Length: 118
Image (cartoon, rainbow, N blue to C red; front, side):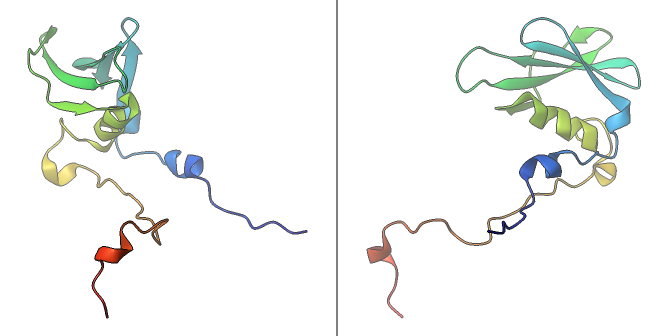
C-alpha cells in the first residue's frame, strides 16, 4: 500500500525571515523576554498566566520599558516572527510581508438551509 506525501506545517515554519539574524530573544524570567536587535535592548516581550496566554510587546528606550504595549498575540513566537520580518522597528517599506496559506476547500458547511437557491 503506497502513501501520499504531504508537506507539513512544521517545514513551512522553518523559513528564515529577512532580519532573523539581527533579532535575539533572551529569557528574563518565567514569562518575559528581552529582545535585542543588533545587540541593543529594544523590546520586552511579556506573557501572562491566563489561558490562552496573552503576550505583549513593549518598546524599551534607554533601558526603560514603555507603559503601553504596541502589540499583543496569543503566542510569543508570533511577535518574535513579526520582529524578525522587521515589524515595529523598520520603515514600513522594509518590512517583509507575512505569508499565509488559505485553506483550499472548506472542511464543513454550516447552516446550509440559509444558503441561496441557485
